[in-house]
Image (tube, rainbow, N blue to C red; front, top):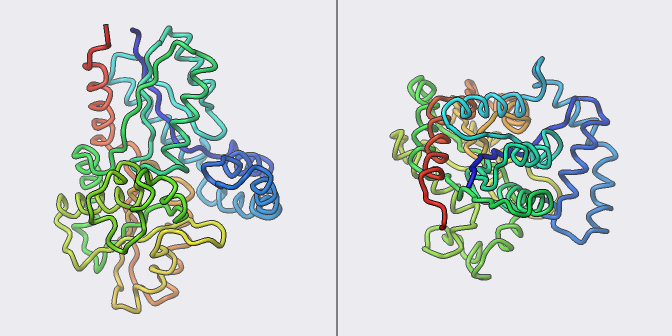
Length: 341
């Protein structure tokens, strides 16, 4: 079999124009794994959101936009190019929403006679609104465009040694510079998403310590996987137990999301004596709107307005050499595994 690799990240508007932002938000929010309601209700909800949100989001994107385009897209393309230099098979890149599209990436693989594709979702943790929707979409498009193509999926890797080593290395200089507190801010998800992804139907969020009790639910439990990332990171980097905490950002709507909320924590930490704050966002492998604007601009302002004195943000892995090496190892393991005869 001819093998290839497909990297998939979330996506971004094509530009900061309100129309492009509206198209992106419409595709993103109409995904039933993002807003998990019946289609008609989802259409009504998204219709209401699209009245004002595109203009607000466009203004936010303008604050972080690069001359070459979206930071997420620009970085992802560089990661693709660096990985391609290290592996002997084609490496394509796609976004779950907008461009470069999954359809175009799979067509490129087909043009190169690839019939076995290794899909690496650029989401370290399992969530139906990120990892799962990317996998399902790739599988659906592949069945339509290339029905004979086999898709092999990289499992979530939020506590994998190579990923943790890269994460810890990327944070070394910031940790050595000193801090009062290290805040791990993960992307939030609605609590109902966690319950829907629970294969046992009765483990996630049933008790406060559900993530401390062994369960088959862990394979698809975003919260438990985030906790494992933190545990592995603090052990690797030597972060004291009493100087770090976890929060969840980017909530949308009125329903309960995973807590504590990052914006609440940023406002509350100075009142608890934290004046020098360090923030890391391990759910994102590439800096994007949620890290650069939500945390780096709005989050910073919230912390200072609450009485904080120093705020530093650890960049995402982006093009860190150990992250590229971790991706290369994933691909090498795929290539070395024998195909069924």
